[in-house]
Length: 320
Image (tube, rainbow, N blue to C red; front, side, top):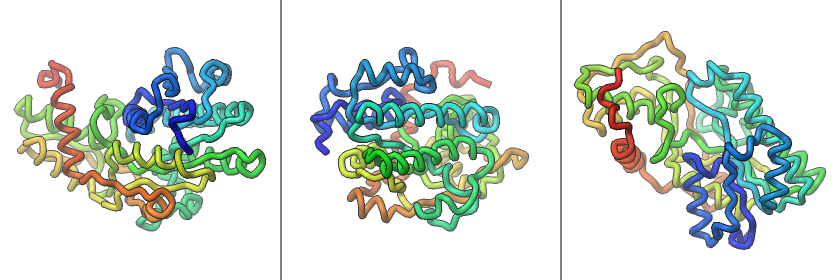
């Protein structure tokens, strides 16, 4: 598909991942008058009436669905009901009204949280339905995964073209550094930087540090998503990742080193760890998309730290 000839709607296009996806689309020749980025102040995508109005006013031919209500372990613990409803509602309304409007393609961005809690490592797409997700993020993961089934049904019944990508944990510039809702990398960067600036001799991190995660630089993820929009017409899930697994303890030590924090790292084992391991098999992405991650982990972390140092609040060093 030549995306430069389409009217492309990117939900969540003003967010962390969305800004990089929109730039990739512009690089392909999608002009600003053909690139639609709905703002939440104007369209609440959890409301069917707003989704219907978006299609009526913007008339997209392709939708890349990135919008989500999401957060780290703490946010998932506090808002399981909201996270299920919001993510399920957005996807259902966007897909159904896209079908009614004759949408040419719907690209859905899933989540690694959709995988079962105990999945053979590396995670392969065929394992998605072999168990229940890790409990703390199950409502979010199940809501996103249910849309895989919806798109498969719509392809078989209505011949609606779609693509599904499943990125691993993302990080990079413009990430969410809010202490209440951030994921692990921005949370650790913020902790280490704050402690260094304030002269503290230790930081405390959640869990045991023994669980593992895989991380994908946001710009690499954006390239994979746009590539799926160009080339894929069937909702067969495609993992996007690097294949590199790191424990949270190793990650904390690496971020401390890169931020020049020399104090102690203590672990609060009363707090949950989340899923025991995460690491994706990306064979399908290489074969179907011709895609692989290009950014080394340390390079991506340095870019993220540099961005935070340039954009953190002026009073960050005075925070408790």
